[in-house]
Image 1 (cartoon, rainbow, N blue to C red):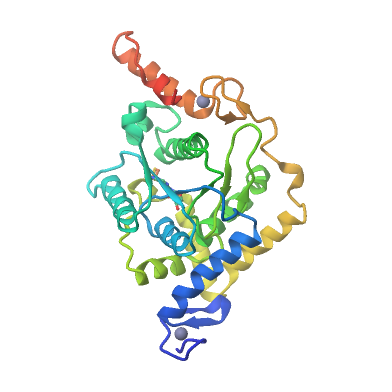
Image 2: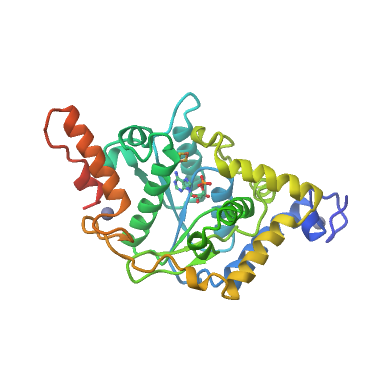
Length: 327
Ligand code: AMP
Ligand code: FES
Ligand code: ZN
Ligand code: ZN
């Protein structure tokens, strides 16, 4: 297989684009495409302050690398969740994020959930009914909350995540299977900021296959954490990724077509009536946006933790909640 641009030996063949490229041209092609998507979907402008959520995995570190090569002064945000176990997932992912930031002279903000709020994600899962069987649910609520909180407090115009096409197609498949029109309405490369206080959220890698972001990270020599979160074993999205992977193997381009057709339908207004950001208001404790009456899900979660801790201490007050609100 030869590179379409120079005829040298290709390192990757992207069947969905009928495009094979050598290392040099692939490493040029990825940032070019990313910049094209940033402009096409009007994600952000050069003079805006951008914050990238960095997990230490290949996608977000590849995206950081691409942004810096494109000349965007993106800052990083790493959230230490306290998920360690045998393979020290948290420590190793933090080390990858830190190493990248130091090597590139980039600014990395770190929020340690245990230090700031009083419990790790596995502890939080144990202490709340919501997360008892599913730590991923309390983890997702916490990550979304902290990302928005830090972006807002830091005066960033936009928050970026490293979601790739495989992530997006799997979520889309799940939402379609259950016909979650509210979620479908909110699945997009760009979610605009809301008056109630959500910052703009964008996914510049949403049109890249996972194998492309992995190839980019490897060829750029980025040291990233290969391991998945130990709690992701058996997750629905992994199952849907496998199903879509089988479809893709037989029909190259299916995943991309599935996602792009959805975006077209969305643009044509098919989900316009199903907005789920209506009724957004400010949480009475922390001021972050929520659709719930009273406190937001994050504050309610920590209130439940405080309650459980108070019960186990026989009534003494615990400072967790005031910290949870970041005040
Ligand atoms: P995941 O939900 O683990 O597939 O991650 C999707 C995206 O969320 C990543 O590409 C990152 O941008 C962001 N992310 C996930 N975990 C973290 C974390 N611990 N700290 C900061 N950002 C994260
Ligand atoms: Fe949150 Fe796995 S990363 S539970
Ligand atoms: Zn070439
Ligand atoms: Zn709140």
